[in-house]
Image 1: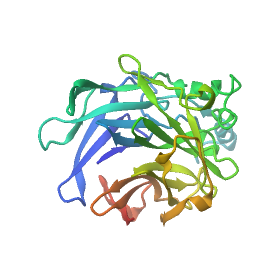
Image 2: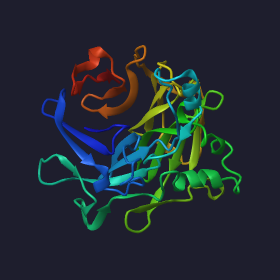
Image 3: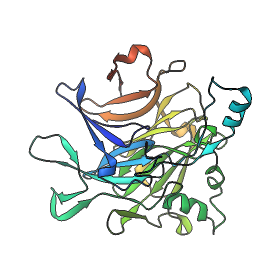
Image 4: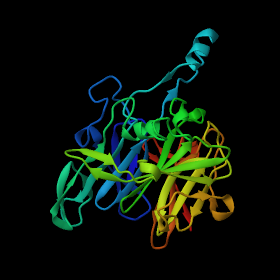
Length: 332
């Protein structure tokens, strides 16, 4: 099992002997595998990873691509905290879309992340870590959004790039990869109740670099799909056959509601889509606490097919110890 925190610069591997308890923790620092824009600076403390997927011998990851507003603190004067609430910042390694080769070192071994290796299924092919070109304030995906519509900026998303994620600003959460199609969920913005999913495809562009293809209408480098999730934003994505499972939750700082929806046959068309609520299957309602247990990620388990969901801000009943928490498994 691969996990990521939004407050570190590593991804974490857990393994299980019984399919119930995942332990044997092994961290993989990402600055050994890809080029972090803020590496070796005071801002190199996190990536804000908001999506992971495994496809075709690669582990894919995406950052939030968002800006954040300062939190109000109880300590300090009212005047100081009001000023603090007005401050926003763009920093760190948030503008990342990357893939890293995922291989087994020998028969039956745990999977490892490496910068490059021969493809075990095709020795003539080299697997190489790569990422979109970017820095601490932007990357080629953000630039594509700003330059869309003949340079006027994308009419749905460009204006939200300067709004903090938890204020219904632009905020990627969730990643699903199928073939050459990369789907990124948007926690925000939610536009009059409609949530967005971006779809991109990439080409290798020299050592460690990926370029966006022109896969959208009018030469745009991304496609836009809009779904009526009843006012919720996307919190995670998961491929299930030709369907996409969507973990949906509040865009802003609320506890719920949270649900999983199935977008049937999402992979059967290459066109941009507008999906009404009655075209989505409500799979499960996910429980949430008050100030705790915010569903943040999901993945499929097989034989039989089930859905594993993990939570941010776990409540006391989930904390087995300082180093262990409970996740939930739902039948599908």
